[in-house]
Amino acid sequence: MDRVCETRWSYRGRPVRLAVAGARRTTAARRVVTGALAALDRITAPGRGELARVHRAAGRPVPVGPLLRDLVAVALDAARASDGACDPTIGAARIRLAARGGPFPVCGFGTAVPPPADGWRAVSLHGNRLAVPPTLLLVLGGTATAYLAQRCAAQIAERSAGGTLVAIGSRVATAGPVPPGGWPVPVGGRTIRLRGGGLATASASRPDGGGVLDPRSGQAPELPGTAVTVIAPDTVRAATLAVTALVRGADGPGWLAGQDCSWWIDPGPDGRPPRAWDAVVAGAGR
Figure (cartoon, rainbow, N blue to C red):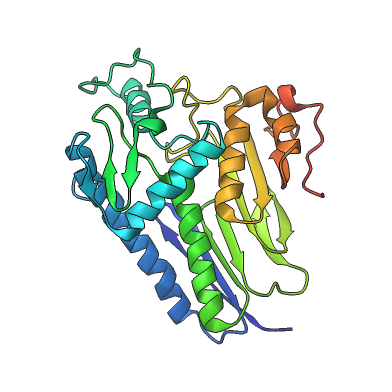
């Protein structure tokens, strides 16, 4: 059995985990992940990042770099595949919710104003030119870390010729040969064995305020205390399916059952799934 070398650290309050089979150290592999996260910071930095420059253009097409282009393309593909449930244009809704919890209103974002329907359809990406209408704010977190984890795992596995796991928060990606017994991944108070592909958990109650919102209402989903975990052939798909199931509320389990994935619902404080999903047996063992 190949020795697995592993390291962990934190990125913006999210745990990061890197494991490489057959490696003596993770120094070079860690540079791949930290470089990708630094590039994400340069894109999303408030007021000075590349995405802020796009928003300041107020709907005019702006040339963007290859990473932002790819992240937006992935986010729009996820929105299309989920029929808008996984919508990257929920940034204004997040500001509205934050304004409710503070002593002062946020100019231009009244809390009673509903979010625009299917805002993602108004985002234009042609080649390396991106245009976002002035009424919308892109938030790429739903799929960005999933994409980066997936890409980093593939790069590291190719360079090291060993199995690799990269986890950024609740987005977990694997590439290359799987260790005997699979990769151990703690999820919802238990440890599962991931035998390839990717894993993602979606929740509306993340403590950093970045939890899932229902794009139709701009509010937390119907079942705000619920967490849905999905295993799929790749991490972006797992994240898209998990977010979509949560947004669909009581219809989520039935919809997930028709997808090519394994999934389960993390129990609530009482140790049971939410009542609306009580009759559904999770398919994680499929």
